[in-house]
Image 1 (cartoon, rainbow, N blue to C red):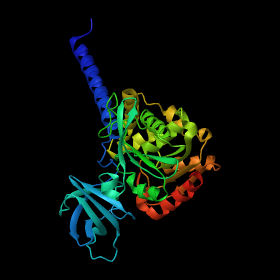
Image 2: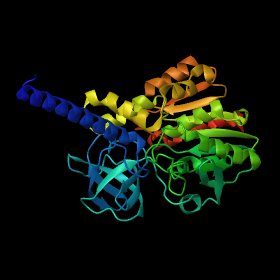
Image 3: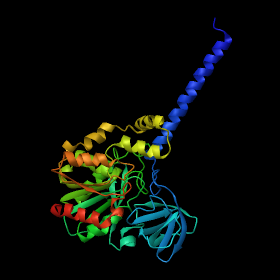
Image 4: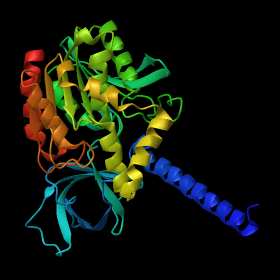
Length: 378
């Protein structure tokens, strides 16, 4: 018969092991939330908080960091605050631990000293008329889970551009290119999809990094074709770019897709999930658990994304806009895609730009690359 002390020790060991396993599973679920529950309008874990030190006429002084030194034009968000900041003003007086940027506008709230803020690629807030002065229609697209809100900015051409935002942003983000597309007389359909404000929730309440959301983009393609579009160009950021790839591969109307614009595309959801979980300071040994937790919670399968992003599967001209500064979606995967399909893929590389912010880092260069790409597709 087993001694009582040995039995107690065995029970304690098993209990401790079960407790450790439960803790690891819980940690994996928490880590996977970085990608599956990335809230719109909040900073991704890779984006540092900055402190407002001072404001003056047309200037704002921020904590000095690699983020606050980025070139270009960005939104500046905080709790109840939104502003637009332009380039760094090197000649403006400042302390060694601060940086001064041009303050273009304060669109909401106030920027008081000590406020905690972050840079965002989402420059505009409101709707196309309020933000850009563009006439538009608020429409409701029938989707498989319910109505999907969208903005439609009319244009004279019969090629439509359907824009799809990505992680951490809303349908306000694509407004950075909306005025440019309008000047080209291209109709623009800017989509909110499952999980967005005003759109249906996914059945499990989680994001699927494009693997199921693409069906809402498919509904937008059907809407465009029913309402006069002869062809559509799909323009997506981040996971929105992954949605574009899925739609181009699987939509029943994929023959109407004449081009793809992929900005900071998520071509491997596992890599992106690991990056976001790692930015949450998840210990390296737990990152595989985060991937498994995401698979278990959502049914995500890497082979679906790999198949949609397979260079051999591409059949339409594709512009990839990406850069090596992206800490969320590896630029190397975009470069490989361009190298393997030089007949269809054009890679426009943007240095010093974080995830989803390729326009922000170089608006003029971005729009010129977009103009050259779109001109033959009009």
